[in-house]
Image (cartoon, rainbow, N blue to C red; front, side, top):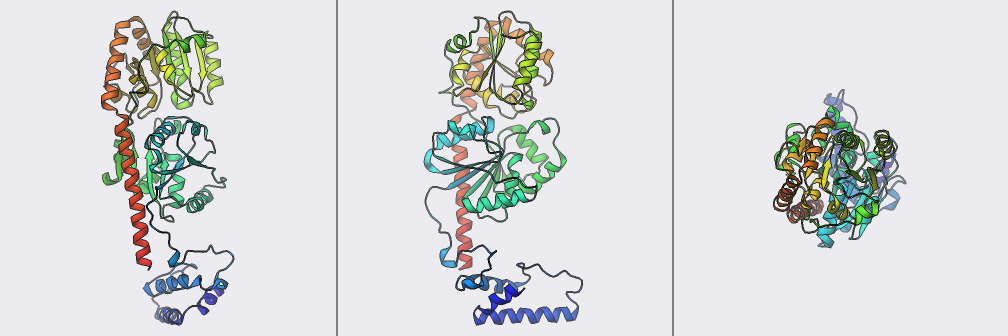
Length: 465
C-alpha cells in the first residue's frame, strides 16, 4: 500500500484529514470486533462514505501530481476534461460473431444503408471476417478483434477495446457476441442493445441450460433486447425471463419495390440449364440449413427436366457436391456460389425451397415471397406465420425428406397452384412485412439508446462536479 500513501502525501490537507479519520474509524471497529472475521478490502475498493470521499479526492488531485501515477495506472480524465455531451451523429459499435453474408449480417447491412449518415458505425467481427462489408454503401469502420486468450481474458480484452473505441451504443448480435456484454457492460458508459436473431446448429433442437442462465442474467441488464420473430419473443419471455419493458419485437421486413417478379432468363442461360422447372435455394451451406435434406427430397421427387439451383456457399459445399453426385444428380443440382445480387436468381426460379432445421424470420423466404414465388419451407421459427400458416404442400415438418418430396411434386404438377400461391405470397410480403416500417423502428430504438447513453453521461458528469 506504499503507492497509496505516496499519493495521499501529495493530496490536499482536507484529503489527508479524511484519510486519517477513516483510518481511526477502521482501527476502532477492529478493536471492537466489528470487522472480526471479514476479509480486508482489495486495493482500489472502498467501503463506507468516508472512504469513498477519500478515493474521489485522491483521483481528482492525481492529475495535479503526475509523480503519483504509477507506471501501471491508466491516466484518467480530470473533471474539466470530462467527455462533453455533443450533438454529433451517435456512434454505434456493432459486435457480431462473424460478418459473412447471412440473415443477421445482411439485415444489418440493409439497415445501415437505409438509415444513412444519421449514425456513425463501427463493426467488430469476432472471427475476423468481413465478407458482407462489400455490400455496404455507407462509410463504416471495420474493427479487427483482439486475440482469444481464454474464456476470461477475452471479455476483458473486449472491454479494453470498447473503451478505446468509446461508442455511444454497443449493439451485440446473438449468443456469440455476449462476451462483450460480460466484459464491458459494467465498465463502459455506452448503452447496450442486444439483438437475438436466432440459434446455431448446437441449439437448433434444444437450448443449452448454461446459456439460458447466462442470458437470464445478462439480457435483463441491457437497455433492450431486440427479437426478430414471434417465436423468439415467446422464448425470450418464457425461457430467458426478460422483463417486457426490456424486450422489443421488430419483425423483419422486405423491400417489395426492389424484390419484384419479372421474366429473367439470363441466369438459366449462364448456368446452361434446360427449360424445365427450376427449384431454387438461397442461403448458406451450413449444418443448420439442412441443404442435404433438400437434395435428398429433390432426388426422391424424381421430377423430369427439373433442376435444383443452390445459391450460396459454406463449409458443407464439398460434402453436398459428393452427395448430389452419389444420388445421380450431377448436372441437375447446380452450385451457383454466392451472388452479389440475388434478384436475378429469384426472378429465374419457379419454386423456392427452404429446408432449414432452425430459422426465425428468414430473409430469403421473404425475398422469394416478394418476387411472387410459391415457397416450400420447413415448419420452424416464424416460417408458418410468414406464409400465412398454409399447411401442406407449402409447409412441411423439419427433417422429413419424404414430405418435402411430396410438396415439390405437387407444385411441379400444378402450374395454376404455383401462380396463385406466388400472387398470395407477394401480396402478404408487401402488406405485412414492410421494409420501411422495420427501418423506422430500428432507427427509433437506436436513437433512444443513444439519448439514454448521453443522458447518463451528462448525469454522471454533473454528479462528479
